[in-house]
Length: 114
Length: 119
Image 1 (cartoon, rainbow over the protein chains, first blue to last red):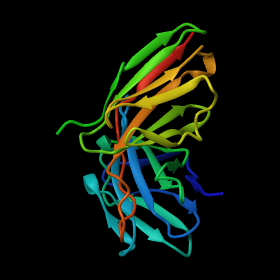
Image 2 (image 1 turned 90 degrees about the vertical axis):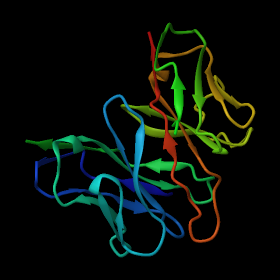
Image 3 (image 1 turned 90 degrees about the horizontal axis):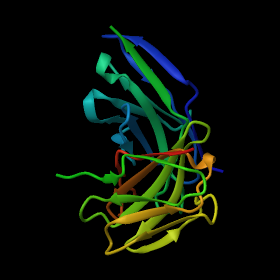
């Protein structure tokens, strides 16, 4: 069965430091991977996606993600965290043959401290 | 431009009552999805529409749940005889039709959700 895992419930980082939010996947066929962010009382906002090509994907708000096929990972990164980056982050993948419906990781809460 | 909108933003109802949740997708998006977000279950897929048809209803948890879409636009999710375990945030998303070639999957754009509380 396909799955997406986010091993950390919460990540704490100081403002200005680099951040990483981890995601690993198990999908059949070519992996297509997404990162979404959810701010309090808001819906999910698309950050970036990996379809094919370069393993380093750049997205919104200065975020990027590194696709690693051998480690089946798609970690979200940002060189310098902002307090405003504090939110809930979800990694997701479309179910193969499943009309693009997404399966999500459990989510990682990012807390950036001043 | 306008994003995905959902109404109501909050709904409190009594156990056993029926509720209707509405979603207005982005204009031109033929694909529409409903998801449910709850503390215990995370984010779960409920149903997918392509135009007015629902080729995938596999995520609907019981026959108390139904959804329709009219005019290839607005969708309504109906929960009959609500139960306390139905309490969750119901999210709607829309996207362009699945493309082909090297970019077969398009990102989904989510609405703000409807928070349903069943007392």
